[in-house]
Amino acid sequence: MRLRGLAVAAVVGLLGIYFLLPLYHLVTMSLKTDVQTFASPPVWIFRPVWDHYRRLLQGKFPNFLVNSLLVSGGSVLVTMVLGTPAAFTLARARFRGRRALLLCILGTRMLPPISLALPVFVAYLRLGLLDSRLGLVLVFLTFNLPLVIWLLKGFFDEVPDSLLDAARIDGCSILGAFARVAVPYTSPGILACTILAWIYAWNEFTFTLILARRDAITATVALASFFDLEKVAWGSIAAGSTLTMLPVVMFSLLGRRFLIRGLTGGALKE
Amino acid sequence: MVGGEKPPATRGAEGWLYLLMLAPAVMALVAVVLVPLGYLVYTSLLEWKLTNPTGQAFVGAANYITMIRDPDFWHAMRVTAVFIVGSVALQIGLGLVLVESLATLRWGATLVRTSLLLPMVIPPLVVGLIWRILYDPTAGLANYLLGFVGLSHPWLADHRTALGAVIMTDVWEWTPFVLLILLASYAAIPEAVHEAAAVDGATRWERFRFITLPMIRPMLVTVAVLRMIDVIREFAKIFVTTGGGPGTTTETVNMYTYRQGFVYGDIGYAATLGVFMFLAILTLTIGLVRLERRLAEAA
Image 1 (cartoon, rainbow over the protein chains, first blue to last red):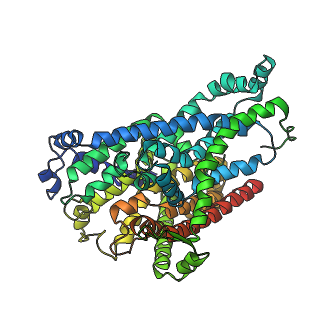
Image 2: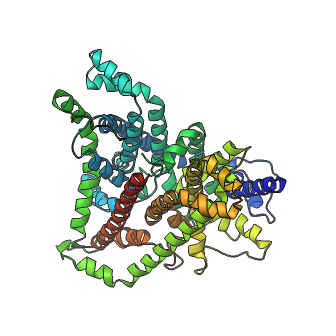
């Protein structure tokens, strides 16, 4: 039995190293001097220097972070405003084709971005929406709206009928029951969906690479372009990556319990 | 919907209000998904190169015939197939090996689950960057650690190891996903079943083979299909680690489509590849939905 316990501890320890060491390496690299970064054997104990961050923040990187913030924020706002009432309807209304519509919406989530990016690129070329934050906000609906509708429908399914019926008897319309009863009742779920949708928007890469050129570029696409320089600036890459993943990591730790449900939700039944 | 009689269809004023709440989202999806898909199919029937100033010409199925005869396309198909098999097999294999140890974990379970969450929530591009740094022969930790066993190597630059090295980035990012789902379905197996088997004198292997595996198998298939869909759509990690290279050794169909459309500017042919990818994923998604329905009926 003790042997068993030791084996489990060893497995967990190795797993911890495998999943966390790469992240640790990235963060420490952003705080090392170039000499320390390339030292062999690696330097494990050092005094952090903030030069990479200072240089990064004096350059254009803050603009890209602001773009990420505006595009992800705007896209999540539109997604939630459109998706919340739609999810309520799909959970509560009874009409023919409801199930088919739900499956179509779920299927939309699975589409390869490249198949959509190509026609959208051509359309934006004509509409003058290339390299615009508005264009990105709109196209991000393709992956976030289906996700939010699908997850929120699950939450609205759990609102007890008796609560909604009571609101109706008190003279609320279905809109009133939605706004005054269903939304407050599911607010933890709505908040968690907002975080998840925001993470997907913040992390987005393919659409942005194709549809943004210069002004609308977000942090993820800016990071990829760091390798185009003649001399690879490892310290800046590490610092930029750390800054870009920091908000996501913080929100994930806050919403940990739900995120496990949300991220694995597609497989774990509606 | 669990049993019971069907509620009556929604009608009248209430029906109109419901429509009002649903229509904007559906219209938005039609505008950003359905219309572009229709245009994609139309574009795939055109000869349309951005480098060619004479513009577009309707050529029917010519692009599709080009695709079937294109050796680069078939090469990309093989790369995608290897990526799918390697990535999904490793993730599910690791998941199965680890699920029991993690499920019986008494202390530190929260910590383990939290650290499992991190690789899958950080930007995929950053995952790619982390591994590009780790693999780097001069700055890389992977090479230093592997150096102890004489395996230091430019993993991403060697055409024999590049695809495997990129697959490993996917394994790092998504094994946690497989593990978390397996943990959930493992937890759903009633304790009494394990106890009964132990009383009957079943060995650990027998319990795994005849109890755990059959009970989590439906979930395994679902996870495998979901991971397949994601691998087909994979872009950021390949883009930033190898860009499809060296040569075209890590160029999946997705990367090839990108190259045709946005590097060569062959919009017509890229659209054809885009239609192919769309159909492949649609087939897998329909299969997944059918499978889930069958499992729900069996349960």
